[in-house]
Image (cartoon, rainbow, N blue to C red; front, side, top):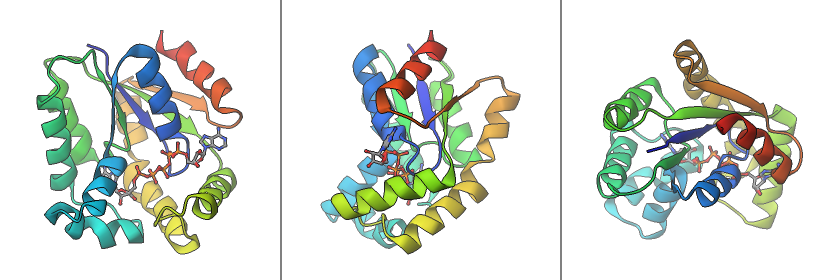
Length: 185
Ligand code: AP5
């Protein structure tokens, strides 16, 4: 089994690159953001609980996302591996994932490094073109702040464990993918 975490701030290209990696290696792509947005669009009990939190750009409770991920891993026992996108985002989530995968294969962390100016540019653009609810000026600002305060510290955690690879996330989608690919083999 091969597992990867695509890591980086909002707008770094996690989803874009995770889809490419999953397709190329026949892995299962798991995006907690996409799974949560699905809950919101179906107005499930979870969706109703997280809707406002996501609209503000805050993190949803660890328990909720841990439960979603556990469920997906346990119900996909036969897959070749997973590409985690947007998970984990806290030390508790990271520890939870390691416990779930310990008997299989601990994931390698692929971190996309992108400047704040470029992140804001990409998210504003998507806000105009696609209209995702959290791609507005105020929420973009808060998402970047929440990332720096609560998620970025995971880089030291994984760095200490020698499981972290960082690549330049600027440029064309395909050239970034090639940089990642070069590090994955
Ligand atoms: P989530 O959906 O994970 O959002 P995010 O981290 O803010 O990331 P984005 O989807 O905005 O960006 P991305 O890095 O995936 O880049 P993408 O490829 O889309 O989470 C949303 C919310 O859900 C969170 O705020 C939180 O509330 C909640 N949540 C999710 N997971 C959670 C967890 N584990 N714990 C607690 N709460 C959680 O690209 C962005 C844009 O840039 C796109 O338009 C894309 O086309 C474009 N783009 C991509 N690559 C390039 C490139 N190289 N050049 C130019 N444009 C590019």
